[in-house]
Length: 92
Image 1 (cartoon, one colour):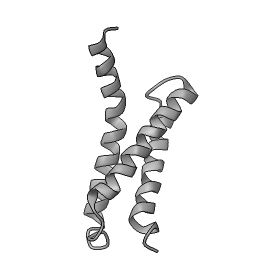
Image 2: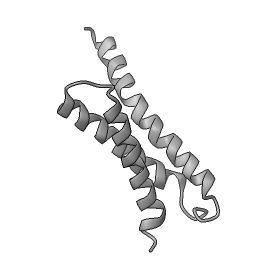
Image 3: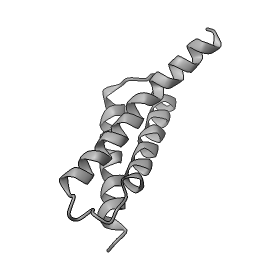
Image 4: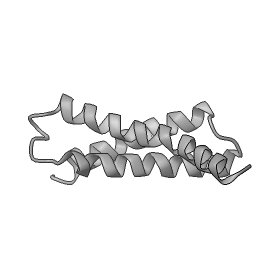
């Protein structure tokens, strides 16, 4: 595998969790726009994408493979918990 192939593999490995974090933060900001008016989008998106990437890496190490449904389910739960905490948990 050449360096360009390695870059493409890394890009494709990280694209799904980062996309999940960004889309989930956008939908959260859209759904609760009144309650989250004072919260910046980046304050929601960066932790959500970071947790999704962390879960992706942990499940790759733990299961030995990428692309398992348990990985994606854990990402959805992890991103939802982080979004809830950053959107509503810190202000209370």
